Length: 328
Image (cartoon, rainbow, N blue to C red; front, side, top):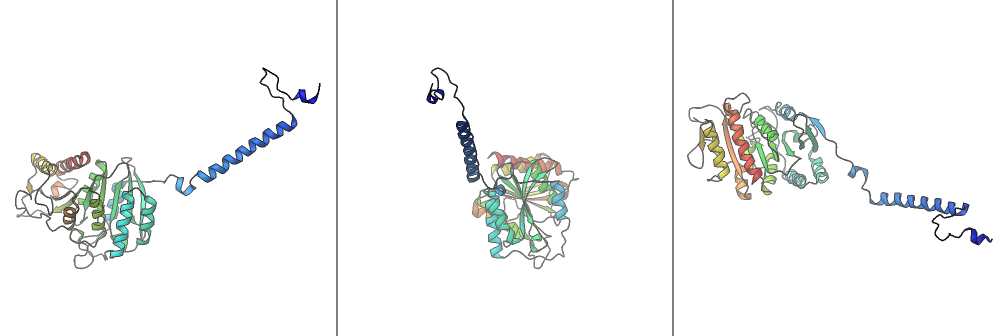
């Protein structure tokens, strides 16, 4: 029998005779396949920096924000951002709203601002925070919090934290209790700096206004929270208006009616002459230009403080408005 017959496959037999040479070729083939696989993975896999999931900082969101505002003082220095800085901030916020966090971070860094990914230990909800990273002027430009678990469909605005006492706490509560929201909060006392520069409800050259306008450009409606002290010319618990607009959409009228039904004395600026109507509020005027919803709410202390007798009713009415925005 010749050697040729020894290495032929038998008819009906699926076994392949193994020789030292064929074993070597088989091993060599497997090694080649493995090397090719590794090479493919190296070419197609994103780099580790891009593919690694972003870590989220565990925080008590309420304490984090109130700890920030607790340092606000009327005699603090304040310098608003310049035109170029506001333009860069607008681009950063736009990138974040579009989901491009890396681009947002690159645009924020030269401003002394950064993007931090947070998880609230109380609710488990995730948020993206734009805030100062150092101790420069940007620490008094304010902060933005975006709900990262849902598309942003509404925002709460707090232009006068500390000055309008407890409005910051009410804004946090709305953010925590309602999905799809954003919280825009001013970064200093309204009387800080000079010549009312820090009164961001009446200044277009602020980071606060810049952020609100970027939300408005995307059709995101907002409720701006204010507070007033008891006075004989303000016999109300709430003053509700739509800023520069002299009419109210159904959901805003429903909110005012709900407050009224729950025992709050409400002045509706679209139906009567009211104090504190917010008609010269610059965010209200920009909302009119951008065709975005805007509600200006002034609350007496008993309707906004944590221990206020009407706070629960006011909060529930505001949440009802937000629910209508979320469903709209």
